[in-house]
Amino acid sequence: MLAADMGSPNIPVDHIDAKKFLPRQIDTSRVFDLVLCDGQVLRTHDRAPYREKREARRLTTVQLALGLEHLRSGGTMIVLLHKLEAWDTLCLVRLFTRFASIKLFKPIPGHAKRSSFYMVASCVQSQQPEALAAISKWKKIWNAATFAPDEKYWEEIRKGEEPVSDVLEEFGPELIKLGRKGWDVQAKALAQAPFIKQEGNQ
Image 1 (tube, rainbow, N blue to C red):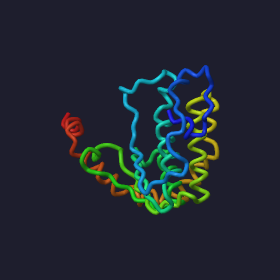
Image 2 (image 1 turned 90 degrees about the vertical axis):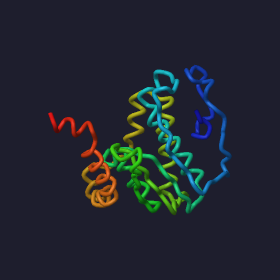
Image 3 (image 1 turned 30 degrees about the vertical axis):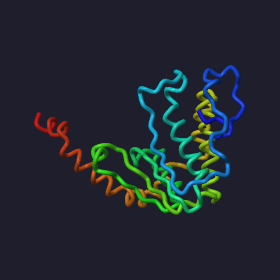
């Protein structure tokens, strides 16, 4: 609950998790050459009911915001993602192409049949305007997910979104190029999966 690091040092006293929020944990001047963003929400995590539907986005945005904010210019970020074709995922990958060199990597052990993959962003220009704007947006989304009602939360998520047709026209070919190898790995693994073969034999 890194509220101060995410720009919210003053917590409402009546908030259900008021005692769980922490003061600043990472010094503003501290930077790293490599940042890993691979945390995931687990069913076993103990959390208040209001966080159930928002926890995945809270975890994603806090990792991205603090990771990029404390990444040395020219450094590398490795981000665990799912479903490249999903709107939020493709928009994130597209965003990173504006200030970093991007490669997508899908490890075969443990990931082949799944939608998961890693985005490896190298030579990240973390001080470019696009990167700074992304950090600001992720912090606002985290704060809305943590403190705001549903209407404000979704308004913050969708603020500034471009039409799907425009995004696909501009980034669609690059998306296919980036994702082709990973999709091929997944398709071949699924074709050999026992549960697929069983359905085919019925």
